[in-house]
Amino acid sequence: MLATPPTAPSGEGDKQARSPRAPRRCWLVAFLCLATLAAAIPALAGPTLAMARLGAETGLWLPRLIGVARYLPFEERLVEVGGGSAAQCAHQDKVTFGESVAIDENAWICGDVTAYGGNVVVRGYIDGEVRAIDGSVTVLGDVTGGVAALGGQIALGPHAHVTGDVQAIGGSVRREPGAQVGGQVRREADLAPLAGAVGRDLLAQSRFSAWMLLFWALVGALFGLVLPGRLARIRAILFTQTIPNLLAGLATLIIAIPLIVLLALTLIGVVFAAPLALALWIAWVLGTVAVGSWLGFGLSNALVRIGGNKAVSPVLATALGTALLGALEQLAWLGLPLALLAGALGLGATLRLMLFSRSPRLAEARTKA
Image (cartoon, helix red, strand yellow):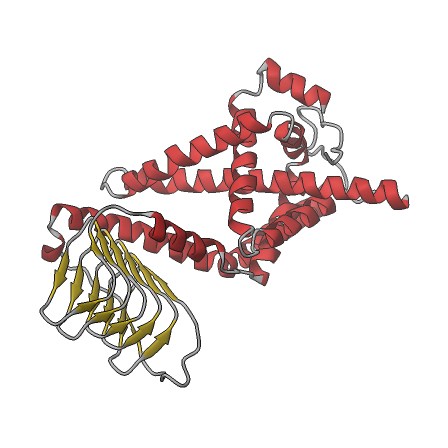
């Protein structure tokens, strides 16, 4: 395990004593706040929109479930896909979130088509699988793979030709005379193929963003400057009580996220949903910075031992370690599990330190670190 710096006293670093450098420090804190906010806007715009769409789809799912969606003025967003030919068909998967997809009758798509929270209409030719998660699939053309729908219906037109299996989980299959299916038509809940597809969609795509990297570096520098004592106390218990911290973080996410969604769907609870979501996000960011700070201090101590160089300042070590962690979290396959692990670990340590700061176990862990 990489070495961590000695734990700061309980009041050290959280309150800065008055000194001639105080005005300069205040200006630096203000600059970091503004820079972090400026970097957060482009860095978090994409994830925020994705979460907003997911929340909207969650809100639309309840009316669909009770059968009143057709009476509500919902506007469906449609993505039309056209062009291509058999000779120029290049393999490329099409994945949408909160949008429906329509494949034109003259379009050739080489790859899988997956819609999360939307419908899929196939009039052309697809050389791959077709899936709708919380949506329906209508096939009027050719699909060389299978067709699956989770929480929706599957309709096969009279000229539909599906080479693989047709599977509807939580819905029905309507097959017009003349529709051809090379595989089986199933309605049982076989989730294995869909689970594998969802895992590939979430894990296999690289999401590198320079703005996100800059955001993590700035927020690491900001917390390292403003809350060095608190970060030191979180670092002290991160890996001395790994399992309790990780379980506490995961339990918080499992309880808090559905609670926020339920509050957001009610007229009265929406007032409390936004502050609760903001508090959870700030605690998540602080916990991630604490893990990045542990990484930065460990690398700094290793470089000092190897090369005998001068130790890096705590603010710089926190910023570099958090930026490195943010870069690793954007890698394909590794990024999402690492982000969940680091965020839940840091979140659990942060909340346990806030709620049980006087616990003898935590005090003993900080003393031994």
